[in-house]
Length: 96
Image 1 (cartoon, one colour):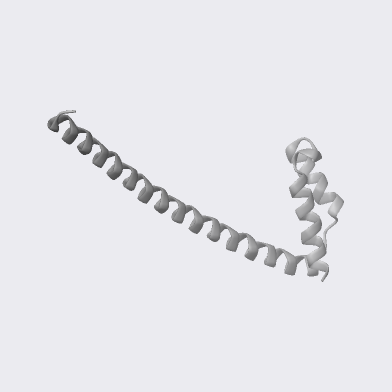
Image 2: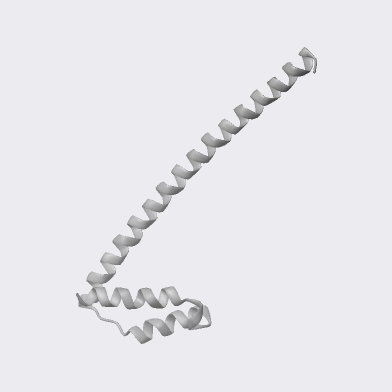
């Protein structure tokens, strides 16, 4: 391989290396942003659950009615099993 071709290959390899480094930095920044958003969402959810638990102590609700509402919104109670589970968890936490 000629000297000229070798320098072309080295130049292209350097460009690929730079591009990979930029992609890595972009991916890291995106990951940091997403983790921050997830942390904010978790804090918001936790605070909302705390408020609900305090309110539910003073204003109890019927779990069956809440689950029926979920079923009416989804069209099928089995489509939202996690929501059904959270209802039980929140109502149990409110009793403590």
